Image 1 (cartoon, rainbow over the protein chains, first blue to last red):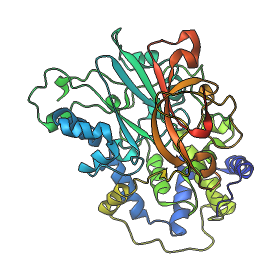
Image 2: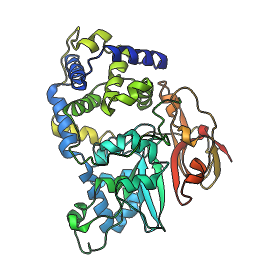
Image 3: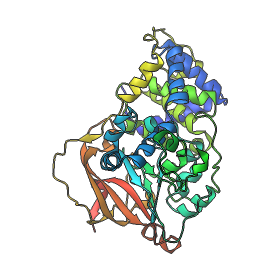
Image 4: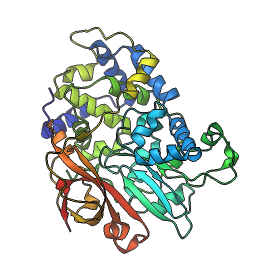
Amino acid sequence: MATFDADEAARLHRDLHSHLPSDPALRVKTLESLMVERGFASEATLDAWVEAYSDHIGPKRGARVIARAWTDPAFKARLLEDAAVAIKDFGFEGSATAHLKAVENTDTRHNMVVCTLCSCYPFALLGMSPAWYKSFEYRARAVREPRKVLAEFGVSLPDGVDIRVWDSTAELRYLVIPQRPDGTKGWDENRLAAIVTRNSMIGTDRDLDPGKA
Amino acid sequence: MDGIHDLGGKQGFGPIDVTHDGPPFSTEWEARMYAISQTTGGDDWTIDWFRHVIELLPPDIYLNEPYFQRWFMVYATGLVQSGVTTRAEILGGVAAAKETPPRDQTLAEVLEEVRQSDRSFARTATDSAVFQPRQKVRTLRHGHSDHTRLPGYARGATGEILTHHGAHALPDEGAKGREAAEHLYTVVFSAPELWGDEADPRDTVTLDLWESYLVAA
């Protein structure tokens, strides 16, 4: 049973941290052997989890959802209405997607997602978050100076575009629907999905490049 | 709590390293730590207690340990505190009593488990919503010393209700292992309201805030 005792947790943090080896890999290896010995999961099960998030669950999932939204207006309407349900068409629902919300970029609006308090992210749809998303720099600055942050990602916005930054403070998770670029008329879903970048679904990329397909 | 984790708007961190285009896990131990986190834990841990235990890291540790080492610390501290393991076991890596793990999960089983884990935090409301979309609201000026999801930068600020989401589990109670349903809203603030004249008046920031964080403006 957890004690939910904050003072005790803070004390244990200090105590354990001062006695742990400094090598992060060694710490985790020690925890892993212990958890296996305690019967939580086998090594093979842990391998399967690593494989799932290394090779199967990642931003390609989100890109397929975006490509469908670009080609199927009825799907796009459902995605904007309730993204958590719409992604079940693909079986992409799961960890942290029960309250997924899709927000759409337009000629006059750019959307950007951050979690200033931790690093909330729609894992089952976009996979592991990129290092920069979890960085102190991004978490601190995205809400305060989004235009400077975007400039560091190589994105500059025309004058008529406002920015809406979504700080994920509850269990809602956000998926940005980037604009479909010109020069992609008649493309099928697979070809379109290939040009959707992970960053464009978080909002640190904007103008997608049809040349990347 | 006014912890080091509450980073929104803090200055001095410098440029963002935007170059991450490598594999999903940048090191092997990150991958193992993530896998451990998905298969291990206390039966009664809540997402809010998990987040609170990270926030309770002393600031020097929080700032100096990599992201997944902060997760490691949650498991080390949390498992000892829950009586799942002991301090000696965490530091030594050898279990006093060995138990047999459940049979191996296949990749297909893991993917299916992920798919089925879209856990809802919506709860049945016990009262009607106080605020309606388009209504002006002000956030509380003060937080409290336990877990809460009203960031410091958005306190005492006036915004407008964008969306009402019905009732969701309140994190302030969840971090204590208790359940409470409370109405949740997305609230939109103008950037100058939060940051003053330096901010671009075209821009807005939204936060998802529970009813007890808000008063009518």
